[in-house]
Image (cartoon, rainbow, N blue to C red; front, side, top):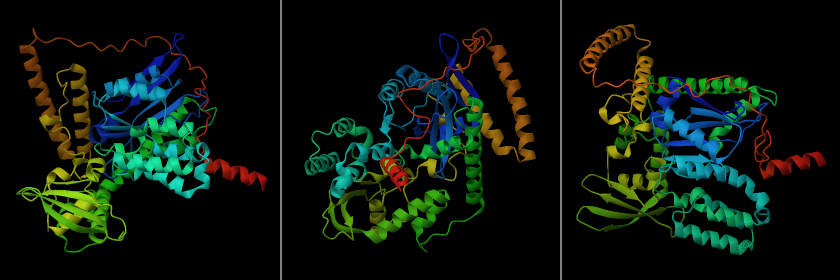
Length: 485
């Protein structure tokens, strides 16, 4: 189940290494819709970039779904990383991938993840902004307009107006950094990504904890083995935290802040504790902070409800919720469900207004439920599209059996049953193969391309990056002041 591949240069020196273990493959199958890929950490004696693939599980915790070391940040090296990663996970592309701002990476993602939505890290952008745009330090209004453009605009039209107001007020027409940023606005502003799942992740800050652990266990003279061990310890800690939360969800009960609410009572039995907490907060925000100000019937069964925030009496901004009264299908103009995967406060306010007692099943994503990882491989629908491919078949079946054995390892009776059943299955499979021997083709793994001695990687320094995590403008400023004092 552990898969890895290496990339060498013309002198047979290591310039790329990627690995994924069995647990990570299963996690990616369950939660690989949104991933974060970060290459900002380089603290090892070869100065190779450490690039973890990070996802989010049903408890909203970080999970490790793969890792790589690369010597150069070029289009070719990134293509190798992404193509190898896809090969190990059965060709499944993420819905959304978050990265830092790198042109080579952008090109590689377009080539290898053509169906994925590429998003840029807002955290990195916001940290650069004060030093790139001095006006942000002098005018709070200009700064607030910029951050509003990043994550508060509900439409592309609203973004364009807000951006124009910011440029005009700050006299920023000639700011090159802002002009370049505007050209890639569809990758960092939420206004242009309302139809794509991102779980509410706006930056690669989720990978910061991985970098922090590596920083604590490695130094400029550390070997790749030491860095790998540091990541492995981090992964083990994350998996232990997930296991602990699984136990709490299985053996504990959720107490809702609102008693005698049928809708919350229903969903509390389905969601994990953390997912329910997020849902409950949205429900409470809708019940207390959102008002239904207008209703209009657009067809026999469809009604549009105009909502707005109760505390903003002078704000005319409204969100429109369309509901089908026959099956309670709902859609909100904020598109919160499409992006985060959990119903928004506007829809929940309308459900409360219309006395809906149970959330339609289509609005309960399996990835947030108590059963997110159970039965993942137990239906034909779960099979990969290229199931007839020998490589895909082997990869899928190994994950299937690995997942099964992990779930039954503490039950002696289940282990005996499964072992006996596997013996019978193997006998029957051999009979079928023997009968079909003339049509069956052998499969030969092509794992000999890396024969020979692999040498140590060359010492690299790509794109002028230092060994440390990039510091924000404020961190640099505070450090300079402390020196003066």
